[in-house]
Length: 387
Image (cartoon, rainbow, N blue to C red; front, side):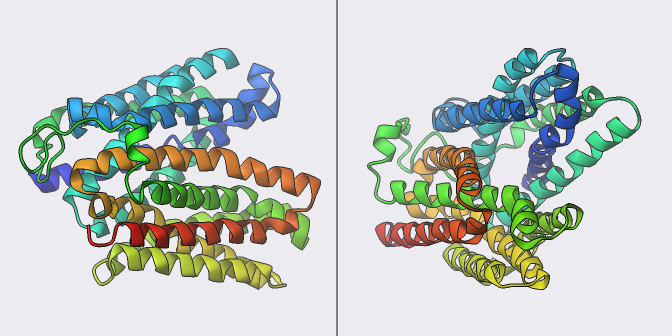
């Protein structure tokens, strides 16, 4: 029965990825229909990110009250309803309103599922599950593309994904009896209910600020690397836009393939070793990006993607080991909030650098973020040693 639940969790991770890339795929059609500037996509993204940060910070409270299964089911239901709302939106303002429940649902399910897997399954499943997220994020644009090319319009693209989410919601509610706990979610080892940890309490825990900063840096690096890869290749290396776009996609392919491979490597290496391996590959990739020639750029982007692959899932999976099972949900919640904050802040910051200084700073910007991430992760390991 536990393996049946694992299969449902795998489907949930694919479902998590499906809508993440829809806005970018549909926006060229949406902004023209709503007659708004193309830059307004950023407004929708910020609303979604704000919702995910809020729900991530509340995940510990909600999970202790309802349990991981119900939080996941209700969160997926919220995203399904929000996506259906997108599909019937007739104005930009209405779409912004539906972005609120979408963000709240996405953050809730992300934190709850990651903590449940970290507590109950080996590290290899965390890597493979995040690989499945990449599969979902890759399939989403194809579904939207089908809707657009078939003449159904972007509304139907969102509706197709909404229907898939509704089916998953039904499966999650039916699976609630399977959400058994091997370790404690609502009680500690002594059988005493664990108290909800506020942000004020969390930041006082040794290693908490370090892991939050490390996670902020990782997600900032991944988001910046993916967003600005094409611009760097076109504006600094003189590569044509079509070729640059193809090269940039290799970064995401590297992450997805890397996570599939990482699952097998975790059979031999523990989480900290996998994170260090990933950081080393990212460093190698950045060095290759600094070298002249298309081949070096191509190899650099793939290598950075491969390096990113094990970092996110292994930081998450190592959280119970560093902080204890009774505090892992609270810590994973703040890690998710840090992740979304890094994703929101650091890519636009590089945009200012590219605009006012030069896009050539792209590899060096990634290098600085990587250096801070490495320092904070090593600090985390020392602060939590022996726990």
